[in-house]
Figure (cartoon, helix red, strand yellow):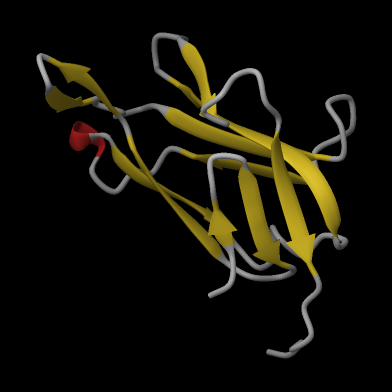
Length: 124
């Protein structure tokens, strides 16, 4: 698997699957406390620029372990079968009470890139 996610961006081979494990917690007195994400929605968009229509729109509300803040956002081969190039992305969580937080990229002063590289093995 050559796809990877860093704090600056994501690199993926065109048409590949990418599982993005996410764990929501906060620190209190030196301990990590999980955030209950039951009924929360995770959203990811990939765009050429901030005004362009999304090339990828991913939304998930099925979580691995919601009470302990664990989920996986999965990009399928169909999601990532977009033209080779460098795009921009962010990921947000929206809670049932309407609160919404963009958590990726972790630095709010930066744009996260989403780079799609060429796929050479093409087949089913």
